[in-house]
Length: 216
Image 1 (tube, helix red, strand yellow):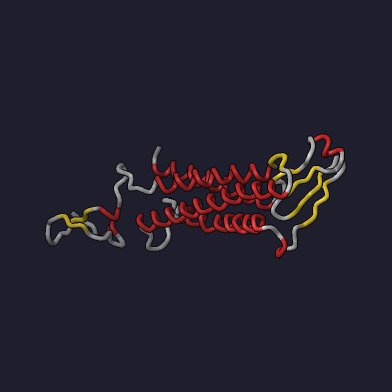
Image 2: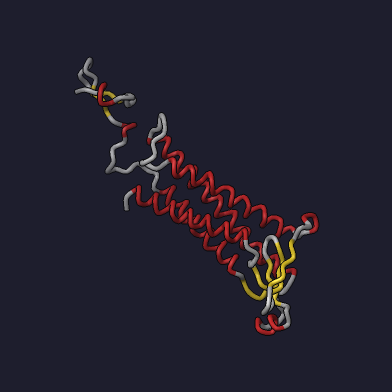
């Protein structure tokens, strides 16, 4: 697989993972709590659903949610999970911008292949940070919720966070691994240019207008 294909695959996986992390952060079906079976809890209106922002009671007719607005009284695992997931969501924007600006089809002023590689590496590192923040949050939250109340099952929000974390981790690793110099593609930064005055090949910086100044 070529370097460009690996980078595109890593970018696509990371962007999909970023969407999964955002969905997990915005929804409140992280864990479901109940002391009985699902059918019994639904019939007795005791099936609870908990997320980062609200606690809900799921019944056959409706779902009633109460917002978790008392920041000072919230448990530490919940506040930490909130902070980590918000950080993961915010890191996605600069990571995507850095990866897009490192594409070979995007040309900025005074761009070189070395600068593009540095941008891509920085974007890959940010995606890895996203994955780490999301993994810590999605693992710590159900453990803390189970200590407070009997945990019956995981909700779709938690699965979305796990899948998003895995995709961000995979995409970040692919982006970082494909930043070496491709042996089949010559680099302009390491090219030899012939000087007409000396008649010998010397390693020089590529001129601004290679078509006019380079001559053999």
